[in-house]
Every structure is written in C-alpha cells, then in structure tokens.
Length: 166
Image 1 (cartoon, rainbow, N blue to C red):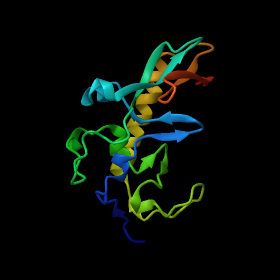
Image 2: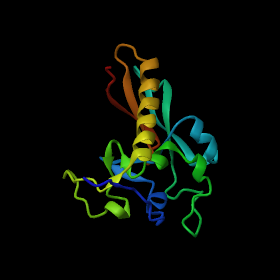
Image 3: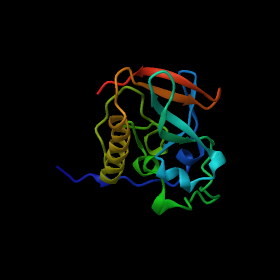
Image 4: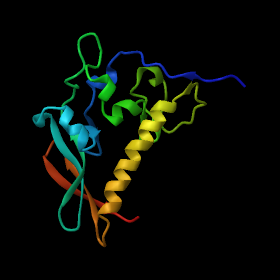
C-alpha cells in the first residue's frame, strides 16, 4: 500500500472569499473561538452559539460576519497564516467531513463516501482541537433545560435550538 500525499492547498482563496453560508434560512459565518475574535476588527465579528435556558446567557462561539476574510490579499495569500483561526487550519475538513467548497474536492457530491487520496493530519488535528474547544464550553455550563442558541446574521436575532444533553 502506498503512502498518501499530504494535502496541498491550491491557494485559490475560494474558502477565504466565500465565508457566509445560508443553511435552513440561517445565515452563518466562519466560526471563531473567543481568543480568535481579537484577530479581526470588532465590527466584523458577531456571536454564533450561546447556551441558556430561556434566553442566550453565555456565548460559547463567535463568527466572522463578512463574506471575504479581511486578511486575504490580491495574491490569494493569508496575511495572518501562522495564527489563522482553527477553522481555517482545519479546512477542507468541516464538521468532520471534507468540504466540496474546496476546489481540490469540488467534484464531490454531498452524501457520498470517497477513498481519500490525501493525508490530512494537520487539518484533522485542528478540527479535533476546535471540537474539543466547543465541547469544553458546553460542558462547563451544562444544566437542566439548557438550550443551544444560534445567532442568525441576517435577522440579527437568536434562534433557540435543541436542548443540550451530554
């Protein structure tokens, strides 16, 4: 069996220029940890997820609310590459799957399984770190009837979600 090649970004910046996504009529931006919000101008950041019983009480995740990252230049280079957010480090892995928004994988059809051509060790590690960050924030505030609230960038309102059960 041959070694898999390490994934190589094409540096097309498609992922950096298409940060907003509308799913189920909720406009979402690039997820950011609390620490990562300091990388961006305050006006470019909004809350993303919060925990609360009857209303959002504690924000546990933030989001970039602009369609194009302010740090990608005309040569498709990231000006903060060494300290870019975890979601950028994990791309093209998003929520445990490989995104077909990446040009390398744009041929993929949603819901189908593919034999992987690439080793994505660094991306998987970043994805795991992001997942642990989110789980930690949820565990710290777990209580009965706790809901996960999501902030919609279009309406600028919180949407109550499912009950959080660990």
